Image 1: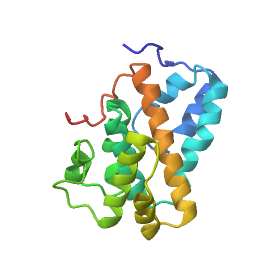
Image 2 (image 1 turned 135 degrees about the vertical axis):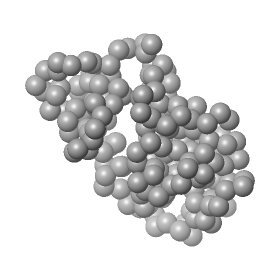
Image 3 (image 1 turned 90 degrees about the horizontal axis):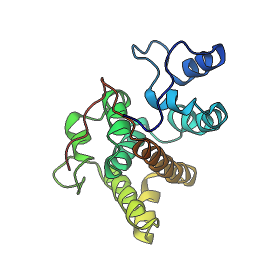
Length: 186
């Protein structure tokens, strides 16, 4: 049971409009529990929407790269909720295979998986930032081999954003969506 219950229908007109904005058109699911929970504080939800939607819908990173980062950050954080939502929906749409998704949850995500050199650089950067909150020059140089400066800036924000989302979901004991994928055991 989550520490704060997500809102349940019927919603006020304002909350209903806001929740519909957060969900892609035609999605067969109710608004995510995370979104319904955030709308317990509509002002905070509104501020978070701007960054979250911008990173997912208007970012400069290729969709597959973005989903690799999200999967790795949430897996390392033990955030079954967010890993499962992305693994069930956006990650496969972006081209991540089940094998690569499972690999993001392994302690050494690079070992035994068919990652491209660019994706290995991404995974290494996520792991290094998670371990130390810093990037060694070699990790920076590896990223710059594949990404422009504006993309690397976005990447750093993306990593921090999904660490924040993981802290939120884990701290509130948010239960996994029934349709979400299950985070593999590490």
